Length: 295
Image (cartoon, rainbow, N blue to C red; front, side, top):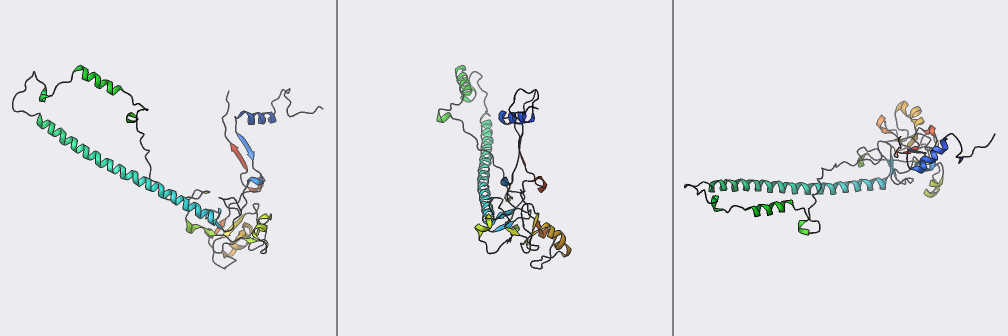
């Protein structure tokens, strides 16, 4: 039996490989790519800096951040909100002044119209051969020049005739700071410190980062990783496996580290990345939608 070449163009069948290759080159059709382990964040890394956390904290939704990074993010968001609020208040004051000026001009126009009507009232008959009120009637040449001025378009090269662009209307900014991962409101009081238990207390930070298994469960001493579902206990900040939570902690709902009574909201599941395998339960496929050629 003859061998089949991948780049063989003499075949009567349009193979899957040829279709995939043509799709990548043509720029049409949806492309999909399976993410490897190198493209997935580790469970103990910051969601902003993507680096192992030195002082980790967790949100109620289970996203871990470096304390310095998330506080800087919240401060930046509040600064931007303050700038937007200042611009909105400035626009509001300008609009208020414009409305006051319009009301004043409308009042003055009403007074002027009333005075003009008062001046038209006369006690003697008007001469039909003279213009009303002693004003000279506009001739055809005056009307023609007025029409020509109305038809003139603004000249962009003459500063006095250049049209002005109106400022865009600003809406009132939202003062709430949202979590960059979950999109839910985020407050500083909701951030909970996390205390990972390292594999070896004697290891320095650099040595700890280079290890494949860096932390262990605070109760069962099992190694933690992306393949192991973990949770943080709010009172103590200890990190334990979900298996430990289901089999041990939920029996009496007491924190095994400090003995504090636990509630359901005190057990926060950590949002983990994945392992590169489909069995991890995490979406590991990236898609890019591109134009599709239709017959």
